[in-house]
Image: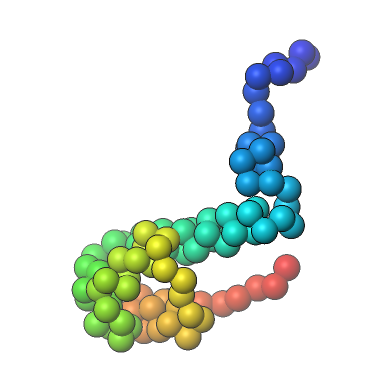
Length: 99
């Protein structure tokens, strides 16, 4: 099968745009993408529970604006706050795995 030279893989695209794994620019991208994914998971679960951002903030002891920033990947989140949002706010259990 002949490979089309104009097609790149996602990994090739990331390397071209952000550099090789281990470079500071790529590391920054990886952290931001994981922050965004966590925010999207929180948003999805909040919506599944029919909670507003304000209701989630009240239940977890944070502010609506902070929940909004997290859901939009615009804010770093401390681990203790993440536990409060997931466990107190969403009623779920958060577990961490090291791989």
